[in-house]
Image (cartoon, rainbow, N blue to C red; front, side, top):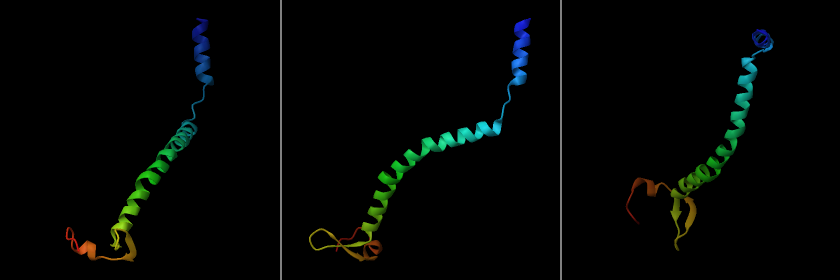
Length: 81
């Protein structure tokens, strides 16, 4: 009988603060998420942007690229000059 009293009294003393728990879980999720976001940006987005920028550059004489942006390659896909 004393165990039931102790259990019921401990339930009364326990205060559940949902907003504080939610705030702690939100902070924990962002702490786990930023390294993945950083890797995603560095190894996916940045190379994709580089490829996109290079696709608008003009082909150089010896296989390189010239920094002259051109839309000629965009107007005739698949045709080599």
